[in-house]
Image (cartoon, rainbow, N blue to C red; front, side, top):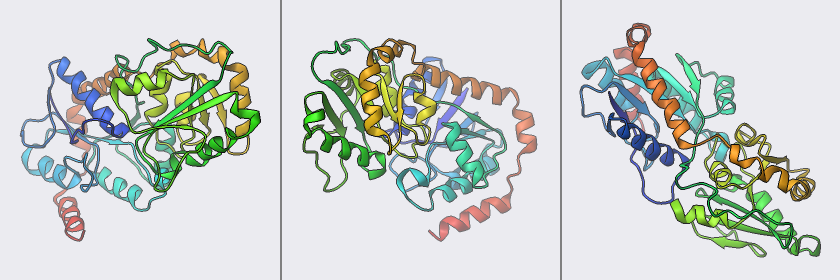
Length: 342
């Protein structure tokens, strides 16, 4: 089997999509699959569209390259579009429409959460066929080895990490917690550490700050704490809270986006209105949640196996998929015209 993943993989600390690409490529190669990151091979079996915005560093090719490849060079390649982004996550405009336009070249669509699926369905996307497949973190790196549970003595240590510095990543809550830590009621009971990139001009006063980290260094830093906090808004799925949970930390998570899908049953949820109350609840119930974290299921092996089985299943039904394909030379020229105007 030959699979192309449409990503330029980036070293070091990067976003969750990049982590998916690294994990999936390794998983496939370990199973003897030929993996590439371009469309040079005329005999590809599966093509993954992962980022249709050509101006982004991780984008190796877009629908503008996939359409002519499957129309003129290799009509037997099955195209899977993995959707992991939306305007709602960063308050942008045009991203959803670009993704929906790109989806016209896909035989099958993967959403990384049910929340993201429902968001796009609500905006009119009608993929040919689809699945919801979860993200997962590398258990060889993100695990509970070395994690020390809170004994009840001393401060309960909270941590979060984000590569993206958009304010919607939860900085309203992180700023609020930072101010709370300056109050006597909380100062001697809690600590908070932020790892990653900050919005321009943003500074912590009563919290600990560490620049972006990745891999084992990041996992070690997470494990030095007790509870993982995520306040991200409209998160399509995310990797940060998964990595925190895999390190053994109970979760304190915002009721927003796909966070409840990934965090429910492994910690306490909160809203903007009840954050203080839920913070106290986390303190009171910490030991209950700490005992459950070994059951957290979202590993990269589980994620990659789901994608691998999807590829096998689609190839088993390749003739049916190709028969229902509605791509045309007219669609190709329409897409080419769209890009010539950008």
